[in-house]
Every structure is written in C-alpha cells, then in structure tokens.
Length: 349
Image (tube, rainbow, N blue to C red; front, side, top):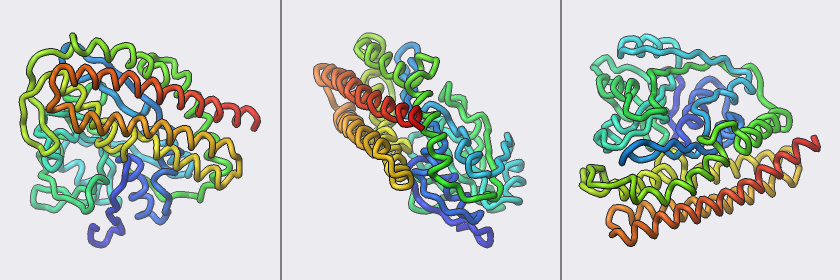
C-alpha cells in the first residue's frame, strides 16, 4: 500500500480487470474482478500469425482495455501517453494509482530477459520513490514490487510485441458516479460479447480466428524451424527449437500470462454465473457451464504444452500440435453453443 493515498494492492487473475478493480476500490467502489472483466466486453479470441519462426500471437481476448466497464459504471477515464519517468511521476501526484500497459518481457521481476514478449499486460503504478524507482502493483504478485524507472520506461515503450505494443499508454480513473445494476447493464455487455466473438468481421478475431488456428497449426512443423533461444519456466535462457518455443508460448498464453488459466474461460463463466444470480435466467447458467467445459479443454492443452514442449522430441512435438488442433476445435464448438444461447436470450429480451 502506498502511504496515504488509499490504494491497497490485491492480487488478481486478469491484469487489466484486476488493475481497474484495485483503482476503483481506492476510489470507494468495490466490485469483483470477474464482473469488471465481463462488463468490459474484451473477452474472445485473437490469432495473429507471424512470418518466419517467431511465435504466432494467440490471446484469449479481442480488445485490449476497451474501458466499457468504466462507461457502464459511470466512471470518467483519462488517457495519457507520458514517455518519460518524470511525466509518469507527475500524473501519480494526482491519483491513487495509474494503470499502464507494459511488455512483461522487459520487467525484470518476470524473469523473461526480453526473450519472450507480451505487450498486452497491465500494472498499476502507485508512486515514484524519488530514488529512481516506481512502486508497481502487478496483479500476478502477492505484494507490490519496486522497479527501476529505466526498466519501467522500457517496458512501457516496447516495440517487441506487435500488434500488442504498449505505446506508452497510461489511464487514470475518476470516482464512480453510481453503483451499477447488473440486471440492467450486464445484458448490454453480453450482447456485445456474443456479436463480436461470433461475427467479429475479421479472421483474426473470435470464432473465425479459432478456425484459422486449427487450419494453420499443422504447418508449424515447416514454418517454425531451426534452433532459437528462449527462457524456460524458471527464467533460465535455453536453446530450443522454434516449434517447441511456439508451443511453449501458446501454453503460457493459455495458463500464465494473466489469464488465471483456461484462456479466460473460467472467468467469463463466473461472470455469467453472477449474471444468472441477478437476473434469474437459466440461459446464463447454461452458457456458463459450456464455457467451463471449454475451459477444461484449454487448461488441459495449456498444462500439456507447458510441461512437455521444452523437452519433447520431434514425434512428441507433432503430437502436441495435433493436441492443439483437437482441443481448439472442441472448445470452439462448445463456445459456439454458449454464444448462440446468449444471443437467443438477448433476442427474447
């Protein structure tokens, strides 16, 4: 906790939802992280193939920091792009904390040494210490951590994770003007979620992107070739194959990079369960159950990739690629059913 400003660090599952929850709590409004996640409407799927042997980017969301939850809560949000430590420190003088986007590969305490990048991550910056460091509240940790100003600036300005580069973005929040009625505002978020995941208008997003992944993954054996450097789960630099690195990175995206496991599917299931409790519509509970079933496929895949990718031989790697295709197809069918059911609820409403 930063002295005197009311901010209390709490660990969380999804970085941007947990960061918003913690800032809102400091401003006097306590709301569950999974409710922020559901109201924000960024849930879904994104797949961005890359050229050469660089790992393809696969994310369990479709929008980074959409701020729809804030709008539904009546919270004013201000966006900033300070490029210097001094500029960031100046912003912190007026708010309990500032939420900033970072590339976790360049935050030393993540132990990735710049060899793995993900620029869609968020932390709250609580204060400047005055000694060349910032106190950072990362939802993945049990307590705040001090980060050198130069390291934080590098993580905020990283260009290593296209199309998910941080681009210096910083957000500050005003006090909530009202307490939301979930029975009124949550169906709006569900309507948006269903439409944008089923028919996003882009083959890189939603259900279409899952189809593209199942069609593309079998080609990884020929496109992800050669020896490369990576970082293992203990933060040690290792030499591995590009295919093994691709599979390990997918495992991290499913289980490790701020998803809480299961590619965010358990989290959206909890949101839908909460909505069922407020609206008493069994359709929300049915969709939640389908997403829980999907989460089991994602979690099984993610754990297998994390446990076996780094030490697998060519035959085992081929088997893991097959598992990617099989698991994603199974999840896709379950999620299509869930989203169709949610769409039907909205139609009846």
